[in-house]
Each structure stands twice: as C-alpha cells, then as structure tokens.
Picture 1 (cartoon, rainbow, N blue to C red):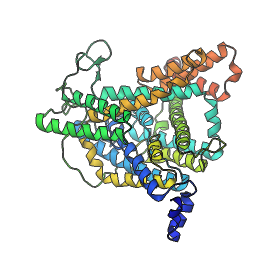
Picture 2 (picture 1 turned 30 degrees about the vertical axis):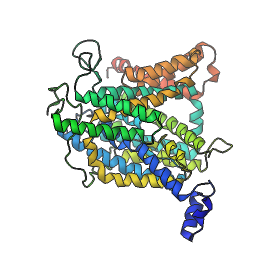
Picture 3 (picture 1 turned 30 degrees about the horizontal axis):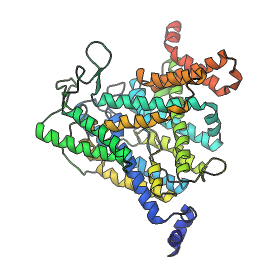
Length: 500
C-alpha cells in the first residue's frame, strides 16, 4: 500500500522522496489522518493560551494588548492572543514538517506561558517579557548550531529534569483550580480556601466539575481529542446556562467582586463566530527594555536568570518530547536520536524566537503529537497537515471568547496530572535526588514562581553533593548556575547593603 503513493505522477514521487513516506512504511492518507488527529489533540492551546497570557496584567496594569485590564478589554485581548497563537503554531508546525521532516506539532508551551503570565510580567511590561522570550530563543538556537545543547542536557541530572516538569505540572494545576474559582483567596486566613467558604456554589463551578469528569472519562477510554472535546462540551453547557439563567460576571467593570457565584474571567455569550483575525500583537516586542530598565547589577542578574529559566524549561521539555514521539513512531536510531535531529531541534528553537515576536510566548514541541503517531503518522507531511489546520483556525479565533475559564481550566488540571506521571523516575529514598526534586516541585506552586522552584532545587542539589563528598560528580555548569541562583535569592539583601 505504501508503494502506491509513488505510482502516479512525478509530483507525488517528489513528495514521497522528500518526506520519506514509503521509506517509513506510511501513505499519504495515513499522514493526513494522523496530522488531523494531532491537531485536534493540540487545538486546546488556542483556547488555553489566551486565558493564561491574555487575562493577566503586567507591571503597568495593562493587558498584553497594551490597554488597562477591564472585563471588556479582556475579551479583546483573548481574541487577539487566540489569533496569534493559531498563526504562529501553524507556521512553526509546517516548518517542522518541511525541514525537520518529523511528525511533531509545535505551539505555545503551557509551562512557559505560565512563567510569563504569573512571574515575569509582575516586574516588567508584556513587550519586555516577550523580548526575553526572543533572546531565550536566540540562545537555544545557538546551542543547537554549536552542538552544545546536548552538553547542557547532560549537565542537569535526570532527577532535576523530572522535578522541573512535575513542578510545572503542579503549578499549571494550581492555576487551573484558581482560575476556575475552585481554590480562592479568602478575606482572612487561611491563605487559600476551597470554593466559597469551603463549599462549591454556583453554576460555573458545576461546569468545571463536569469538565474535569468528562476529560478524565474520555481519556481513560482512549478517546482521540479528549481534551478538546471536554472544552467544547462544557463550553456548550456554559452557553446554555448563561442564556437561561443570566449568571453574569463575578466582577464589575472596576474588577471588584460583586457576584461571587458568577463566571470568573469571561461570560460565555454568543456575540460573533467569524471575524477578520486581530493580528495586532505581532512584533509588539521590546528587545532591550528589560535590560535598560533593570536597576543595577541585581536587576540585570534577575533578567539573565529569567532568560536562563525560560531556556531550561524549553530545553528539557523538547528533548523529552522528541524522544518520546520518536520511540512511539519507531524512528529512533542506534544513536538514540531520530533522523534529521538537527532540523528538528533548530525549528523547535526558532519557535521560541518566533513566539516572542508574535507575543504568544515560546513555541515548543507537543507530546500530544504521539496521538497522531498512534493514528499512523510517521513523516513531516503529517505536521504540514496539522499546521494547515492551525492556519485555518486563525479566522475562528473569536470563538474562544465563548469559552469561560470554568470550561477550559479542567484541562489545565488534567495536564498537571499527565505531567505528574513522571514523578516515579526520582529515587526518593536518596536524599541527594529526593530533597532537591521535592523542593523544586513543591515551591513552584507554593511560591507561585517556577523560577524559585528551579533555583531552590539546583542549590540544594549542589549543597548535598558537596556535603556527602560527591562534589566531583557535579557538572561544572551546575555550580555556576547554583551560585547565580544564590545571588538571585539574596538580591534584596545585596541592594540593601549597597544602598540600592
């Protein structure tokens, strides 16, 4: 059957040769089918990314669109982020298919966008934060071109790589629970509480519970596109509930809570389904602002460590994804790498740069691509199909305004569960591995900072190795990074001592 792909016409023969369709035992029909499955398992990012970076205000109180945060402004911000997210994902996934020639989808990374929205923009503007994403992409691209990327990969121990991934998963789950109103900040103590005064009240919370149960059941039954189906089904439920019951928003135009049982972020009302995409976020980036506005040495150090944190999260997520998808597709060679590995890593690295230029956060390879591989995808042609579907969805971006956070956040919680699955790879009975890993994954959600979790883990790992006389087994790069994180944690003390 595979040979039939080359039987008719030179154009098809050229397509077959470039993508190695027959050589990998596939067919064009199988690649198209696998590419579409990958799209439907990834498409949730068009709804989730806007809810993460399109709803958070920066240090100046502005949304990513550059206007002050109000309920009305959030709707426009969400639509703009959705359009840009779909566009960048489409372009980068097609490039992955044509250059990397690998069945891998590329889109905004969930952990990376959370680092921006709930960390970086507390101390800088959105354009400045996207500038740091761009420079992270430049650095990781240089690592690919020089062959240094694998050296960095070997420097960080496996237990820490696992802890970073799991910690980001817990952080994402906490964000999901908070944005759905399941976890809230009460007026007094304790610091957080369950629901409203310890109880689930209101129809929006029911939507969340239904969504979480639905995605769990669909995933358990191995239904393709379980995450997307859950978002679509619970959004439909939310639209019906709002139309019948007129629930309304939880906050007023000034952002004050006036309706505790209302919708947390956006009200699911049908306004428009199709519209010319708002691509105003493209190239809305400040490449040097984060550096020029930094206060002294400590401020510059914070900026540099931020870039490093972005690079680290992007770096290890990609390596794991490429190997996992390659293993599923049986494309891993004797050297442990899939074919065209340089092209694959290059496109993934460029995804960070392009994601910054498009104001959608760093784009990275998606483990959901394994679903398309399970459907038969074996070549980059599947990625071209996935990317084309993303480009078509650009014109449907206004639909995401219909998706309330209560319908999308169950997927965030579930993604946190999926990332938690790696935790068994840590040798918890070994304090040198267990304690640094624990601090990494615990401090990310508890301090609401991915960077703090990574820093605490790195420092503890190095200290324990030295304390037990195993310092020579630590890569020199780990010592450098640990020292930088120590300076990062005491920068307030340093500023006080120097009178800054």
